[in-house]
Structures are given as C-alpha cells and as structure tokens.
Image 1 (cartoon, rainbow, N blue to C red):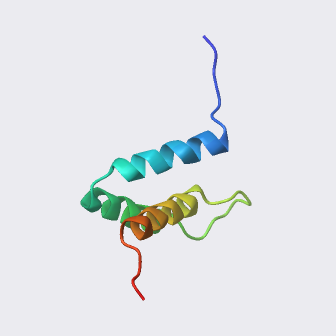
Image 2: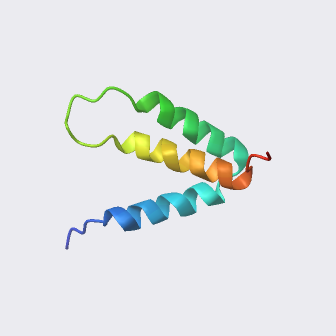
Length: 68
C-alpha cells in the first residue's frame, strides 16, 4: 500500500471543482466556516483556510459579477 501526496495545484483544482458544484447556500456556509477558521496563526506555515476562503469568494464573484 502506497501513501500518495496530492500536489498543491491538484488540491486547488479539486477545491475549485467542489465549490463550483455547490449550490449557493452551501457555498455561503463553506465561506462562513472558512472565515471563522482562518485568522491568527502560530506557525509560520501559510493558512490553508485563508486559501479556501479566497477560493470561495472567487467562486461567488464568478457567479455574481459586480455590475458597474
């Protein structure tokens, strides 16, 4: 049995696909949960929840672009 690691690019693509498949209500819930979970970090590693929040916001803007 082999243990595999997902590349960051593949993980991001899977996240985007998941977000695109979500109905609006689930996307809003996901974004709210990500916002609650991101914040002050003790470690020097990047915050994975900030990335997920950014992707959820990007998906929302894709669905509902601002009209000037």
